[in-house]
Length: 291
Image 1: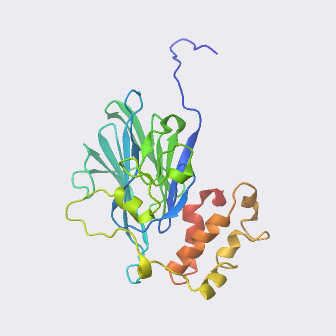
Image 2: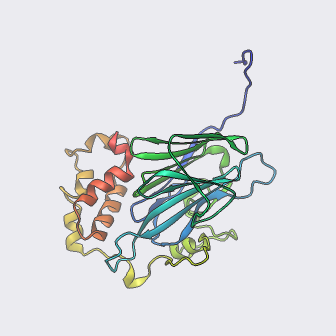
């Protein structure tokens, strides 16, 4: 169809992909690879790579993690804050903080020159391009005019939605968005590793003075007691997710809960059996199950 008066036709991307970081972070890449990485530093979650000879807008999304349960020996982490840098400015969502930080320039964590801003926020002043930030239910959302979307529940769950025209043009923990999960552990030099800690460290952002750890190894990693795991895999704990007669049975037609069961069991083990963790696991990381 043709445009009417005072209208113009523009190309729009067809489709999109979603990357997730949930709990102590369980990641799902843009290509669907699931992995756990427990680093407590600042990392590139996703950014543009190889935009030469394209008209695509560059962006960078960083996450800073922290130790989830500081009083335990388990080195498990959770997202502390998320920063989107686009159009030459940075917008930051912080754990348990309903206001956003907006700053000019490419300032990294820790943020020192940001302006606290209430939601909803809408600006055409960021280099003349539209950026919106608002709250929708439990989620705080940043959205750009070209279809990039970042959500954070200010607690456990982060998503990044990237339009399809960025295929093969991203890098970071969310992967290279080429449709092949097996090569998502790509390093900045283009080589591929099978070691999740090597992969995670490769996308670390160096912050002067920051004290943090890059993942867990050996005995410092969580190893759930088989007896406890068997308990947590059943109702009323995480087994409620897969119970065909349980409260989430209606979700099974649109969402395979098996992978989420494993994440829930891991998190419940990390919290030493805290029953509220089951509710947090479902509510914070799986909005499709809430709908």
